[in-house]
Length: 164
Length: 119
Picture 1: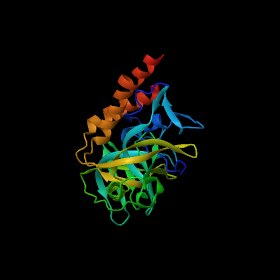
Picture 2: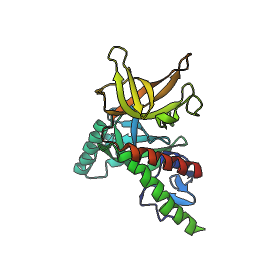
Picture 3: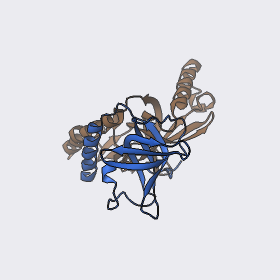
Picture 4: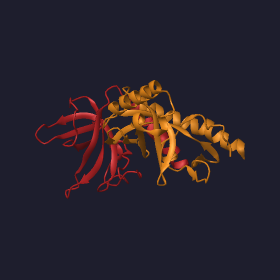
């Protein structure tokens, strides 16, 4: 499968993201593709419409971009997760502090720009968050829609058509 | 962490929200935008308008939002249609969007719907 967009944070609208093809594998994590093109990272912009905080574990929130809702998971367990125990403690502290800061900014009704990895939990697609920016410009979401439409037509669909 | 039961608020211009519209049905989740015409602290009912169209918004569940007549607001919630056919949006979230370019918003909305329909 074509992996040219694999290291890019693709800008997809929620309805487009939620219709990605999920391919399970025995040895590797599930892969996600759109029109035969592998995708692994995403950037979305939308209104935060739900927020469920499990302190020191995770913040699960929903971003509604007007075309669908995307479930986002922001891990907050860096300081007690064995996954991070191999990394330098000061690096882990920095990552944990950033995640705490992002979690504090994610409130109901704000417009958030979220970047992260496309993952799946119990078959449902979600974003494992790497960073969050709260948008103050009331036109930010509109410009994101236009970006998504332009990129889908002029880039992602073109890459897909070159594959055929 | 299955996809939550939270429904996406379909983007709709107030002028397109009339009794014969596909969006005008009980419980539909919508996202609406308009200029605040009236707000009652007692009832928490706001009226927003866009051109000649307007809509009542029940804001009783909204916190931390200051209501200023003349400012532009955006709400996401569910449409409640009363027996007299009057519609009220039961808002879940709301925000002030003063500075939003409403012409750009409406044009982009049309492009977005076209794009969605063609996918």
